[in-house]
Amino acid sequence: MANTMQFDLVSPERSLASLSATAVQIPGADGDMTAMPDHAPTITTLRPGILKVEAPEGSSEYLVTGGFAQINGDGLSVLAEKAIPVAEVTRSHLDDLIAEARASHEAAKEGDDQSIVDDAAKLLADMEALGTHMSL
Amino acid sequence: MPNLKDLKNRIESVKSTRKITKAMQMVAAAKLRRAQESAEASRPYAERFNAVMAGLAASVGGSDSAPKLLRGTGSDDVHLLVVMTAERGLCGGFNSNIAKLARQKADELRAKGKTIKVLTVGKKGRDALKRDFGDLFVGHIDLSEVKRLGYTNAQDIAKDVLSRFDGGEFDVATIFYSKFVNVVTQIPTAQQVIPASFEETEGDDSGAVFDYEPSEEAILADLLPKGVATAIFSALLENGASEQGARMSAMDNATRNAGEMIDKLTIQFNRSRQAVITNELIEIISGAEAL
Picture (cartoon, rainbow over the protein chains, first blue to last red):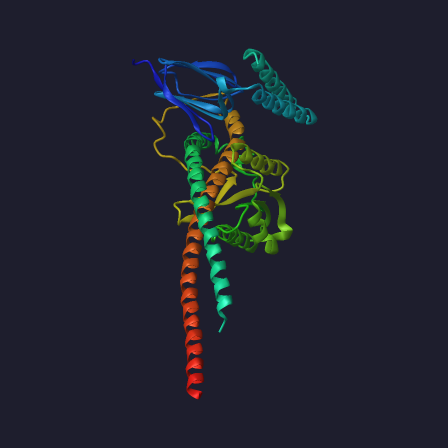
């Protein structure tokens, strides 16, 4: 099938996936986007969220936090600071993430840059929404 | 001449030393394999990361709006040396080579009239540099409790370094670690992480012009701190592999030396035993003759 593209998901510690995919939904910093073959070359940063991969063999989902995605003509590479297959995500993973987000929110509140506080608050909300989404 | 009992004890003790070094060598060999695997597993991330960063840095780098982490603070008066060594000794020249390189660099910088600050990671480097630079230490990161190095360890170090940078404590940060080439060769390396410098990779993909979401500057500002963590993480892993490699070859040498020592002592033992026997014989014979 011609309409697939090379998809790589790597974290600093290991390479998680390398396969041909038909479409990948990326939680971009400015909103979700779906990359399909022949997508315009794009680089976007990630916000914590779920990355959905559609491949001819079936789809898979990963929880990713931090990092970026690079889309070019023939493929897509996602470099995430933390990436966990959704099946392996447990409540404690999420609690860690929420705790981290909350801590940065608290830290941001002490500063006076409103945009950082807003960002942190959004991150925290994202994290909590994630838990509900995955019904954990 | 030492008596027979002493020699025998000596041989026994060298034998048990040999057993210990042999065991350490085998443990190091097993750990080395694991360390090498994790160093290799981290490589794709670091490579891609640097490729993207190089592209971004090239397009944004020149402008005044470039983040401080890339542009620098505008001066280079205060240098932070992050010296990464092992928590444990008995690994040949591994720790002292890194310390030596750091000391060289520090002397060089001092000769130029720069101020230096030292942040140590790993106990051994701290001990080695304490005498010369003890008053310049600004902190220490202890990894002795860490069983398996993870990205989070690197993030913690990066966070520490970055908060000092944001606090205006230094202008330039350099990390010192040992690059793993193979079991017998590890190269002590100094790498500047702040301000970041990226090697230009030639012919990056198709040379496509990328859309950036959000803006190039925002991405760069978001990714630069991660770049510091990534650099530190690769350095930690290289260091881990180097440490085990150095320990393995050091222990291999020690085992061989112990073997040689045992041979030498055994010869000495046999000779003295023979001398004692000869002596006794002479005494008996001359006693018999006297009768």
